[in-house]
Length: 105
Image 1 (cartoon, one colour):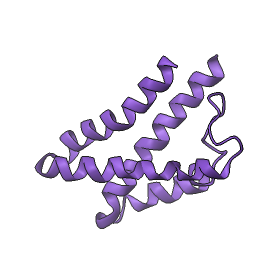
Image 2 (cartoon, one colour):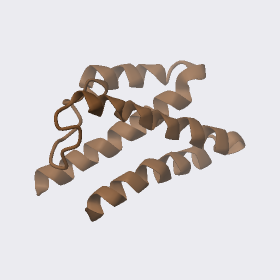
Image 3 (cartoon, one colour):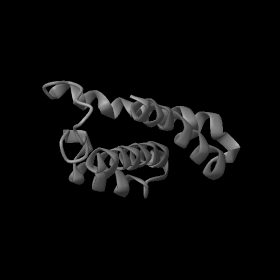
Image 4 (cartoon, helix red, strand yellow):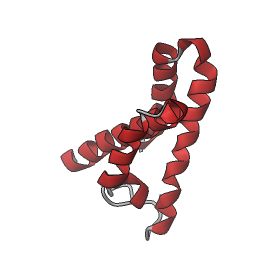
């Protein structure tokens, strides 16, 4: 339970930190855009059950797949999509850390 709360808070805090460091001149806009990429979790609605605290989302949900992550990585090379790509990659990194936490019990 506490791990889930921390994980969800990090989905807001890490984009804020990234926005302040890498997009300081427009950090509020950057934070908002990167936070909105949490919509990538809509693919959880395709799973049964929708939420399983012991399921690793990386490699399970379509928008959390390795090919999708490679696409997000490639989007960083397109200036207009860089914020979205950064938000998605931060999201995938946090979910990957959560997978490690689940695997370690």
